[in-house]
Each structure stands twice: as structure tokens, then as C-alpha cells.
Image (cartoon, rainbow, N blue to C red; front, side, top):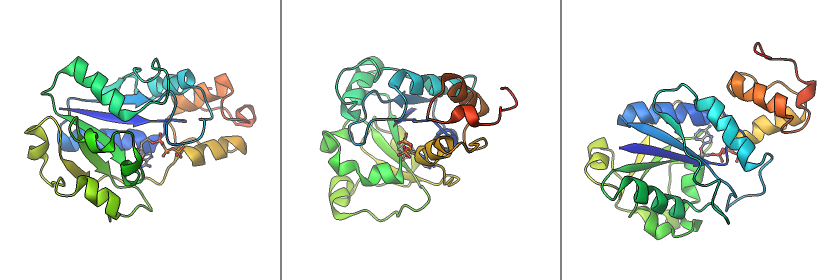
Length: 220
Ligand code: ATP
């Protein structure tokens, strides 16, 4: 059983890394694949280009057992629809392997607007991580989409390639890429919100604004 964590990762931060680790452990996943999007379908243009964002994910995940960078969305043209990504993963891994698409509660709330939303559970399970400030109540369109699919038993995920929705308790870290970018733009030091190796690369490449004004990290 594998986990899939898609995102803009603009930049990757400890909120992403912690949910990936905790969900990997909670569900005993063989691996978590990080899938940085090329062109995000549901949001404005990222602050860093796709290769740079993927490079930051590569640094953040290097050497972490079970963490894998998957670049397939970077090489596709057009918006990075999760539906297309899941079909591509199914071609690689076959129809039987259980997939767990990991979503923060905010992303899960927006699911009804996703491309081919009604077909996603045919390709994967959805595992939802609580996120500070996000309610666990499902609005009617979301309840209509996933109603009856919610389970509290990890065994249900192992028993089928997809089709279930499960909430998982994680350490709730109130970290967002937006806040990290804002700190960088204002010349503040975002260390301890993102890995040092990521911060170092941001500084070296001059990403996200006034990074040259920041104090060096221990590795800098
Ligand atoms: P931004 O602030 O730019 O919108 P973000 O911090 O939400 O970015 P994304 O790359 O858009 O990061 O998120 C990828 C996935 O990780 C989404 O499913 C999102 O809900 C989830 N996620 C991001 N940060 C957290 C967090 N602190 N806790 C739980 N889930 C998170």
C-alpha cells in the first residue's frame, strides 16, 4: 500500500513532511510518493517554477526512508489534474495495489470541484489529515460525493485498491507555504518551519524575494 502526497510545494515545509511521516507510520505504508504539480489547476501561479519546487522536495525527502520524489506531473503539459496522475500511477503499479491519496482537510473540502471528482475513489482511497482551522464537517456537495465511503479501519484500505475515505489524526502544525513565502518576502527567517537544506537552496537560488537579506543557516 502506498501513499501519494500531491501539492504545489511552494515551498515544501514541515507541515507536509510531518503528515507524510505520521500517515506512513499509522497506515504502515510501503512508501509515500511526493508529487509536485507542474501547473496547479485550482490556484494562482506558484512563486517558484516547477523544477525549482521539485528540487526543494528532493532536498527535503533525501535520505528519509520510504519518501520518494515522483516527477511525473512536471513533464505533462496542461494543468496537473490528480485524476490524470492517478491513471498514470495505475499504469505503472497495476490495478490491485491500494493507493492512499493524502489530502489536508482544506484540500479535501475542495474535492467536489476537482476534475473527474466522482471518479477519483475508483482509483484510490483518500486519507485526510486534520489541519488547524479546518472543520471535519463535510459540506453537502462533499458529503454527496464521499458519503458512505468513510471508514475508521485501516484494514478496509488494505482490502481494496481504492474506494474508502479515512481521517487520520496527525500532529497539527499550523504551517503553510503562503506563510513561509511571506516571511521570506519580508526578509524574516523561516528556519524551523522548513528543513535547513530547503532554506539553503532557496537562498542559493534566490527564490521567493528578499532571501539574500536573511541570516545564513548553520549550513550556509
Ligand atoms: P499554500 O499556503 O501555498 O496554499 P500549502 O501550505 O497548503 O500551500 P500545498 O502544497 O498546497 O501547501 O499542500 C499540499 C497538500 O498538503 C494539501 O493536501 C494540503 O492540504 C496539505 N497540507 C499542507 N500543509 C499542511 C499542514 N500544515 N497540515 C496538514 N496538511 C497540510
